Length: 166
Image (cartoon, rainbow, N blue to C red; front, side, top):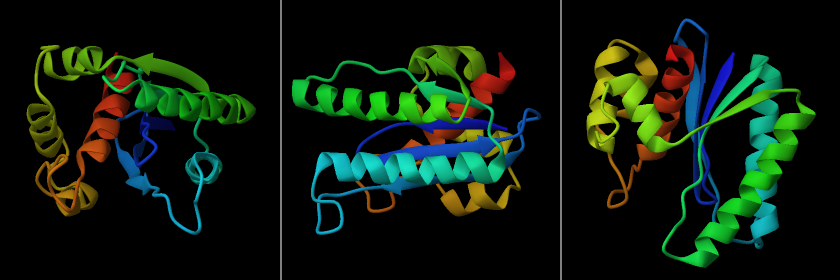
């Protein structure tokens, strides 16, 4: 099994997929600063612990992860770097092979065009997995400005699909 991963401290998208590109499960891990997770380390723990359980439950052997890019805000880059470091350790402990994909490479592999936008990729995913209940429940692509933000999940599906296709 392959785990496609779009890591973020606030909303980590994931998709577990077979090598034949069948979606097994998908979702997102949302963390916020609150009483249960008051620190960045608490939030990183929740993300790593949830993924650790998914990896074990679904016998994941390979991870396809979106490669890090630099944010305009250095604090955001630092937070994401700490999350990626913790994920790297947890994945190694689980004996998973890891492959990093820049967003443009994912788009090039599955769309044939490295400059396709996120919405075009989501439409491709909807067409490719038409009839899949999880994709139907996921609904139309929605990024930052909506309540049911699902772009992280679409990204994770695209990353897993690119991994199995290359």
